[in-house]
Length: 564
Image 1 (cartoon, rainbow, N blue to C red):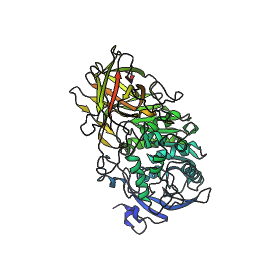
Image 2: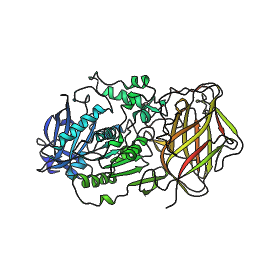
Image 3: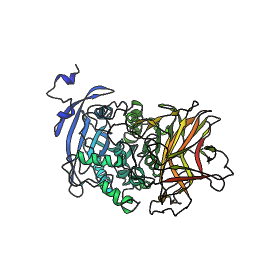
Image 4: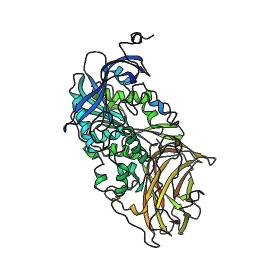
């Protein structure tokens, strides 16, 4: 028996047994066996306005000062004894190897403390025992987070260097806190986190998300039933359908961020974290920044040993001052997906990739193909936007590659459209890969589903107005500031942002674009729970028409990466 376990009165091995104050604990680490540590539970930290937040501090059981790995959210700093308990409810999460003392989406003390780091877990205001009103993903949370960073930087066990780390909500709060540039924040690891609440979770292309966004909010309310002052995000979504001052206040000024960052993005969290993670990397002013991109599952990838060692090497360099050749790390490394959990890794110097060649594939409504040349004759194709149950609310266009082709980056779909029976349209777009036998190749997708597609896009046509200052050749940026309803018989051009992806197509394989009146990929990884986005409050009615060829340059713009 491990020597620590021989004196059960002196140490605690279960997170449920830990009491407020100082505790000697033994953590069942995944990589280092049983490890003795010190855990200070419910440490009070008083904010500028007198509100008290509570944090947990787990640190090495030895003298010295150590760098701090910090995460902050409103999920509860110690409310789950083991994240893998969610597996039976959410069966396709994948393996998540963590110790019992790891709150969901958080750095595992069982990895960091044996490597001589202090792990600080913050319960943001309004959650757990922390006082105050709960305003998710707000500047208020950012200011609190920054204050706790400064508090940790001067504690007796701290070497003065704080690094933030964590997934999802824990990455969202990092973008916010880093934009305030607290002096003791020396590095950050935002691992898949949105930062534009309107475009990336509450509305997709102007279409309200009726699934995960509301499910997520309801979950926050259920976690803290004694808190009667939680911002009603359901009501805010209804009251603010356009990108107004409310949503502007929930958008991080990414250009203010200057701290070194190791960013992880995924092709697999489109509709939640994919877009914002890329924007955080692109827009930040940090001189030292690196981007890792994978095409797998979110939490599973975060907790793999390979990922942990990359995180550790980054923090060792910036928080401990260890010369370990981190600076030789390629600025961009990314997985090009072939099939489910199979692909190959590439590197680059910037994002978007510097050698990207954009190519137009024109929609041909006569042959239902994607052509390299624009068809001379105009053709219109249509579908019944209300024929959802019969799966007839869609059209599909495809082409077969005659050489091996890598497509990595944003795609864009330009369409000329009209609605015969309505003054608005909701368009759902999917990009699919078909193998040489015509079978769809599935990929991991939001949220942890296994029958996902290559890439996704959405647009409510009345939200088609572009911000020309922010739009690029491959990425249309929608203003969402007013609605432009369709007039009778009006044909309008629209540009649909298709979220970043990285896919390899072998010669003989096909790319297919789906335009549909409802969600292209349906279903959930957690039966009975709305853990995936949904868009059930559509404006669709009657026939949708797409115009191709002639004067209508409807096309799919794809990012072709030259062979290395």
